[in-house]
Structure formats: C-alpha cells, structure tokens
Length: 150
Image (tube, rainbow, N blue to C red; front, side, top):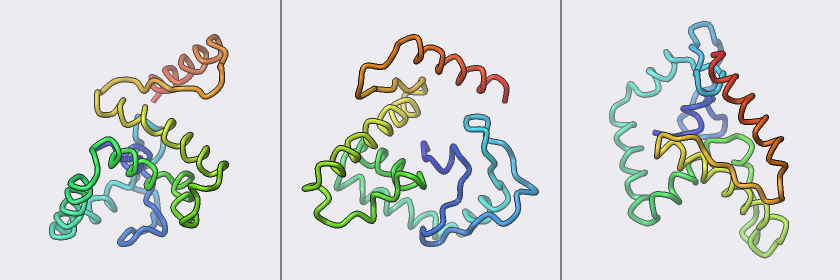
C-alpha cells in the first residue's frame, strides 16, 4: 500500500484510533524515507483484526464512490501532516483562488508519488514554473545518493 505514513513511519495525531509514538527505542529505519518506524507499535495497531477489516471495508466503499487514483491521492493528502491541513478549510474553499491553486499544487505533488508507487517507478515531478533542468538533475542525483546511503 502506498501510504505516506507507511513510507515515512509517522503515526498521525488527530486521526481516530491512532497512537502517538512515545519511544523510538525499537524503531526501524524506513529505507525509502530515512525516517523511523516503530514496528512494534504498528504491529500492535494491526492486532485488532476486526478494526483492520473495518478499515479495509471503508476503503472499499470509498473506491465504490470514487476512482482509484482519487482515493490514492486522497490517502496521500490525509496521511501527510502538512497537506492534511487543507481538510479544515471551510466549505467555500473552491471560491478562494489561492486555496484552489494550493489544492491544485497539492494534487500535482501527490499524483506523481502515487503513480510512482503504483507502477514501482520513480515519480516524475511536474513543475508549475519552468524549472532549471540542471537544478532538477542535481536534485535527483542527491536523492539517489541519499537512497543508496541508507
């Protein structure tokens, strides 16, 4: 599953049924992100099989009402502590040009991540402005070096 929290190891505050990591003593590094995952806590959070089944059914219902791409991007948004803040916008956010542009940029950021995880390939990042190709290449090289260093 390509969840932001699975990649980053973050347990989210404010989400129902989630416990905050108190100690990272038994944490294991996630090679994809360099962050820590408290594996024992995650196993404990999945020990209630009924709860996991209920979550799976909720995701299934979401997929019945929305397409897979929209649900996967939504999960990325919800599990990212920065982008999740948009969930508390008022109901008239669409009329606000700044928020609509911000939402568009969030989707542009998350969609390549989802596609990359779904196809097992590197995400192709879209830029809203003409980015310097040399700077992008240098950034990609640094990311690859960081991945190999883990």
